[in-house]
Length: 218
Image 1 (cartoon, rainbow, N blue to C red):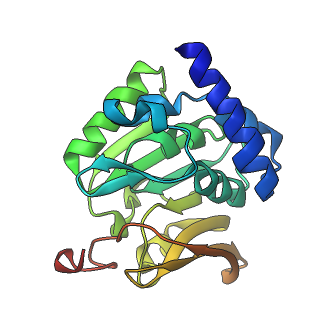
Image 2 (image 1 turned 90 degrees about the vertical axis):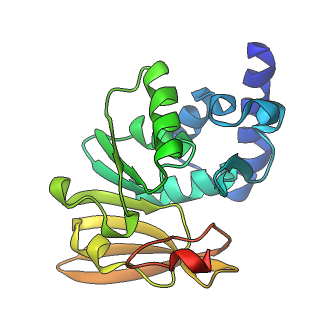
Image 3 (image 1 turned 45 degrees about the vertical axis):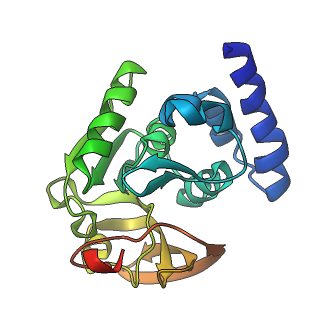
């Protein structure tokens, strides 16, 4: 079975990521090594490397492998970086980040999902990921500023606290739009100014919270 998953990971790299322009060799190696099947429900393990998002419970999803790669590559992580993730979800994105930077602070409003992700990541030997149950739209102010911030849920606009917690020279990647679809936006902070790049159309679950969508709109 392990060999089967190893082949599936290699096929994911070869058919989903490289043809769509993912080029960072370190990122590709990380995604080639991380057992994505450990982060999905047992009944979906055989689908772990399919080219799409999968349900993980609580109305949430694990993102399509390509989207994970696209967002991570856009962050241009260095091994000395401190990253903030809004929306722990399955824990898979945090696993990818943690292999590429010094530390990851990950926040989720759903305690059950965060505890499950923490358990999986601990079993896999991660020691540089820190977890908090909280309203993700507020970030995690105690450990700011962050060199990189990634938001894995769609927002109506970029939450002000995340801009405030982004370090000079930092990068923020977030889906912004309506509840049906969003544009994936990369923000870079330079000399106190914000520079925006559009990375394309995406569709994420809603970012719920004070600086996101109301609970009733989810």
